[in-house]
Length: 106
Image (tube, rainbow, N blue to C red; front, side):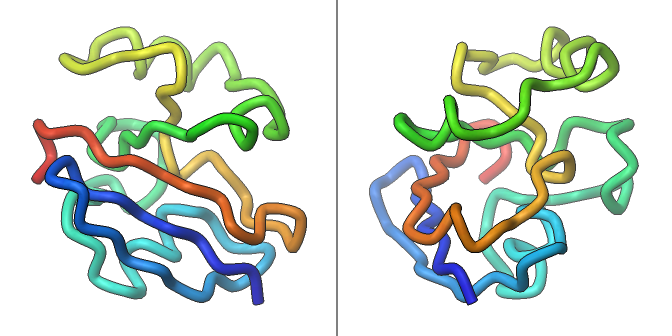
């Protein structure tokens, strides 16, 4: 199982084992990570699973779809590393990925 490191805005980190084939959002909610609210349950319709994917991991992911980009553009703390965690499928290649959480969701 790949390990994913979620980092809260205050620097507190949580390392979780994620299940390959499920979403990054599911890994966060399965492990009660603060800051991943996931109100829409992973349907890419609310933006409450917003996260920052650190380099080099951000460039290893498939690009965001037009729909995901439209959701991201409406977020208060949008950055170039922003993604919706519900749209990222966990793979074994993501072992060690660092995901930072925005202040507005904690």
